Length: 480
Ligand code: DOR
Ligand code: ZN
Image 1 (cartoon, rainbow, N blue to C red):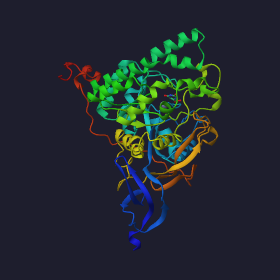
Image 2 (image 1 turned 180 degrees about the vertical axis):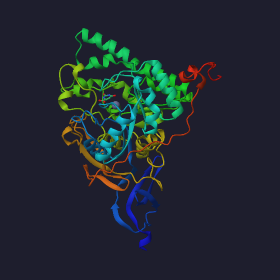
Image 3 (image 1 turned 135 degrees about the vertical axis):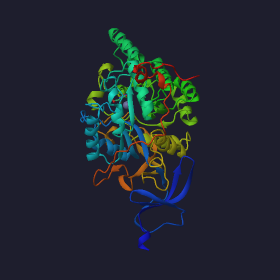
Image 4 (image 1 turned 30 degrees about the horizontal axis):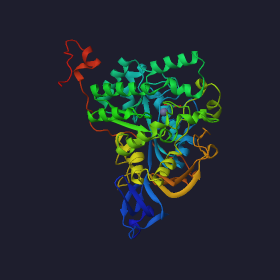
């Protein structure tokens, strides 16, 4: 029966979805899942992967990585970044626009796409920048297939200026009618710069001065401003790297009001705390928003478990190690690698009984896919979906260390920590891209993915800047 032969069968594993676990064999043809069979059944296949004793997860989607090309390839490039992702069980990354040049027009998008297509061993979405200078480019970038937009309200690597609030409102008006999601670095720039200048004047250059500049209200204000403008316009927003326990009630409030708001947190906010910055070499965990006091961790875990926080991503932010070390905190690069350690860290939490492996399928695959218009194609093991699959050995252990990272950023915030639960094989559209902690790809085959979002739901359209610029328009908002 050679006609019925499929390309690949992944046999004997425990297949995980957000709603449960079933023992099943998975058939793959032409890079897509062609069938899911009871353990006793499986079609003939050209290749068989024995998944006995393994959990079979939908390939992970990390909606927040910085792969640095073009412009900062000494920190990372698409080869090393995508290899790190593959080793970490991540099959699709969404890459941030704070490169040099930033991804702020079609030309720069094409440059980045070309670099990624030539090198990436995993699939990728590319963010466009929402900046004050490029509002007229947003529609073109959407047509160019960006996965969504990124708005830097808070200053970070690349020093992209925070747009004026008027520009943010106009940007949201445009994005609301396009329907794409806008990921937001929600920190208040004027406050954090004001405090930083005062701290510097007072000769506070110690690691904790960074947290002092960016205390909770810096994040809270920007979260609530973002949500206010999103509600008014109907823009879809995603809050990146939520670090702050005090935000949680506000996230519930805005979601309860019907704002199309999704939120991510990062393993580093769940595992690290500010005191660690005082350890020898601890300054390397400087990042934006800062690693906060330990008291934030437990509420963040609870918000992950109860669904207030939708997903886990990494803010994989590699830098050369020399850029990360030194005595003056203000001079240190912000951020550190994460894409290859996040799954082991989250599986360790599964082994500790903090969450279930089904929660991993939701937080790291299904929810990101749903939020950014990829669900069905990605984020789920189902017939017709891309065969993006991550095999996990929940009993395997490893000691995390900077030297074993595949990222160019040889910096570990978790040096010496033992993790339990490792990805042992990663497949992108049916091709093995990593095995037992090492990348394996005969050639880069990463493809760009673009979103299919639900119909846009703009609000208050009679008050948009575009509408009121027309003569004789009545600038009346929606009834309430
Ligand atoms: O610490 C950070 N580093 N936070 C960000 O938001 C950006 C990132 C980077 O690009 O280095
Ligand atoms: Zn980031």
